[in-house]
Amino acid sequence: MVDNSILVRLLRQLTVESDRFAELFGERQRMHRTDLNALALIMDARWTGEPMSPSRLAEAMHLSASATTSVLDRLEASGHVERTRSTHDRRKVELRVYDKALDLGRAFFTPLNEALTQAWEGFDDAEKEVVARFLAASIEATASVRAGLVE
Amino acid sequence: MVDNSILVRLLRQLTVESDRFAELFGERQRMHRTDLNALALIMDARWTGEPMSPSRLAEAMHLSASATTSVLDRLEASGHVERTRSTHDRRKVELRVYDKALDLGRAFFTPLNEALTQAWEGFDDAEKEVVARFLAASIEATASVRAGLVE
DNA sequence: TCGGATGGTTCGATCGTCGAAATGTTAAGG
DNA sequence: CCTTAACATTTCGACGATCGAACCATCCGA
Image 1 (cartoon, chains in turn red, blue, cyan, yellow):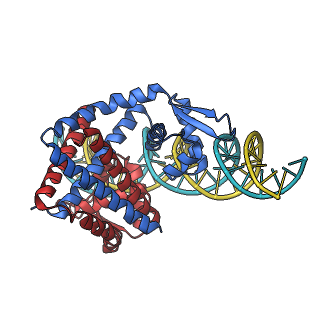
Image 2 (cartoon, rainbow over the protein chains, first blue to last red; image 1 turned 90 degrees about the vertical axis):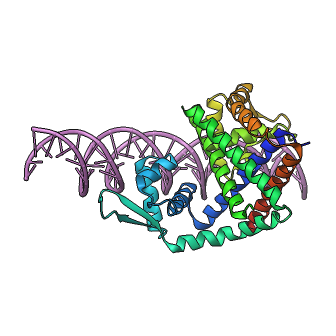
Image 3 (cartoon, chains in turn green, purple, yellow, red; image 1 turned 135 degrees about the vertical axis):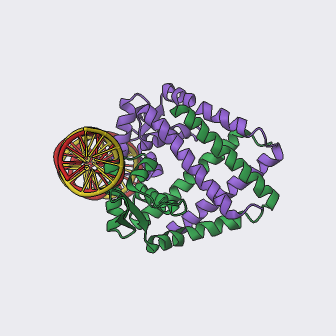
């Protein structure tokens, strides 16, 4: 019998461990957590239609507009991100990550992906389906409690 | 069929969501992530024999000794943590959290625990066992890749 | 008793973040 | 057109978390 408290503890350990991994990546690249976070968000936005803008990035990161400008200054100076003003609404700035940044991330996270894939070899499709359902339910529960607290 | 990349994405979403939850808690208590992290570590140490000390805390948080002193200054000033010099080795400082801090954390995380418990009602013991194994394997894989990168 | 080692704290400097003000751009009304 | 308001982003001055180095107190081995 698996107690719920064990599952809670495992989830917590997992987040701590993921956190440390991201932290290590940041150290190697001489980048802070915030900058990494921003990079990930800008990269994600490539799949969601429009490119990321500074203001949307600020909101997603729960950061002030001015702090976001600093983040982008750093990312631009380090050659990871490109700022281009939108041609149709010249107030807006479009953010794009250079391929170099993508390759860098891939190089670092590939070993992790491989290790995870290997660790998951012992699970058949039915079991993976259970896990996926479980994770989705946990995400949903956490998000809804948070939404309720914000109200 | 559940693709591994879906599982990877779910894990990432989960860590992001957990992160946001902790962030919200911090905002409500006017405490920074570092301070929360420290509180959690000091609380955890209660079950591991000796009470936490500033230097062990610094190492666990990947923080300098002086920064850790600041963290403890803040936690002491806000009435969450007590510093007492060890009686046998008077160089050492023992850290203890006040019951008030424990109650505070419980009050905030109880809704989350309840929501998770409810979300997990649809899973029987065998399925929970699968999930627990999966999480443990993922934690182990992440930790070992990180250890390999540090070397 | 002395000297090095250990555990914490203090101090000055750096840097990420904030809020307010400034700059440049677009849209709506007269 | 011209003015005004709204918008997107950046600049500026201040605050505070973190760092490394120096410092103080304590313990332990020679």
